[in-house]
Length: 66
Image 1 (tube, rainbow, N blue to C red):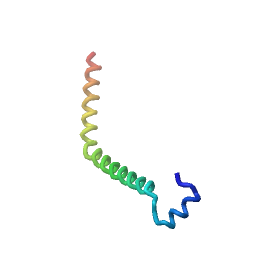
Image 2: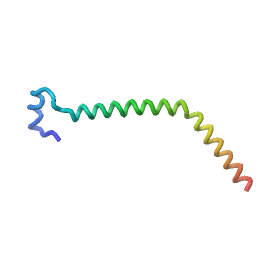
Image 3: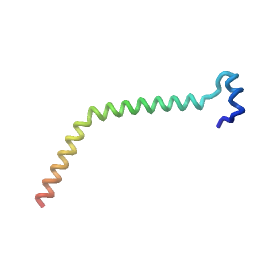
Image 4: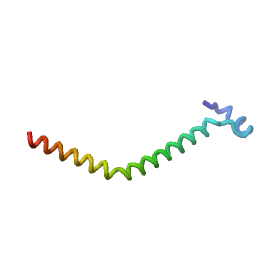
């Protein structure tokens, strides 16, 4: 953790704050992964929904037949 009295010397030296850079990189990776997952779900979402509906109707037929 950076203390208040260490901020000014670090700013005058011109950097030395890799922790913030790593945090930004992780945030960008998370954002790209989120966009990828949203796209993948939108492509296969209809297929998954129809598959789950097929399972539900099959289970309904089995339960009604019992």
